[in-house]
Length: 425
Figure 1 (cartoon, helix red, strand yellow):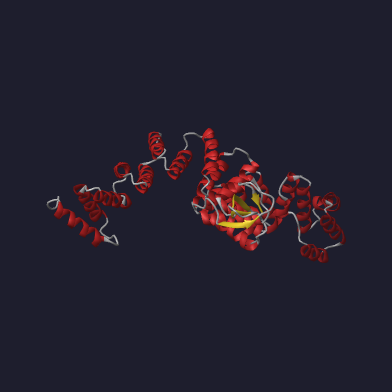
Figure 2 (cartoon, one colour; figure 1 turned 90 degrees about the vertical axis):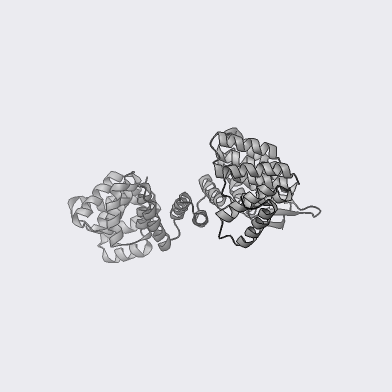
């Protein structure tokens, strides 16, 4: 059955207007339609429509009644009669277009919907045009018509939901978040909405929302959602006080998705990322272990494992994960270099300069034009007395980044090293 709210309900004002201009039989039919007595409408106007004495409005009224009664073929026959008499009737074109779209015939629906839209622009027709273009793979036109529909009427959550999906597919996480939240506010509630919102937050690196302190009675456990906030941990030494994060995060959407679909891989990935960002390594690793059972070799599993190991400071295990990811062609050279660099930072903070140097050299091998890696190598080489190697790194920095904000400092450092090591190479 076709969605009634999109095009079947006539407004009270329109019914009143039509009733004032209609003969008694049509007025009775309009009143029956307003009461929801669609079978009564058929009894009142079907005969006159068939014998050709009915007007256009009676045809449209009968077509709508048929649609409510799931008599779609009868409705289509009546609407085609209207088109034969008035090929630019906006209502008949819109209804036929809707029926064709719902039947999976988006291409055929476009001609009718474009005619209806040209004659009378309304939210329903704009929405249908947007959905047709999306079904046919034209996201740009779909976005244009859906935005128009939303501007005319914000009450249909399917428009903002589809707009959010389109924005997410094009990599616009912030816009996707805006539209998907709008859809939720308009009444959408589904596991898929939580999945899409979670993806939007992941794209923006909003793993965990702003952290607040709130008083919550009843000893809630970490991970519980209370008044739209995720409980993170109790505040030490204070009764009923908890650290919480707001709902605008991947952690929140991951938890909500897992409530609807326990063990869902997307939900586990969002939850693990959120708990890691919140500093709760135990819960992050628990979600990560569950995710690994579903997809042990996926890019996101290996990437999240690497991030967790960096936080834990387990550089040895990190190297194994990087090598595994490169072998499986999950990590490209840039991604592997970034992970080696982050591991080197951990080692440097611990004072393990020799091991840090090895990690930086591995990063440089994979990404020779990284300013961050070259700077770290140059500075570390100087502190370790490796002047010749430091000179080479500074020379590359000067050559590769002549517009660096501190280019004069880099040149001075290179000159000093050249003097110490016996001139330029």
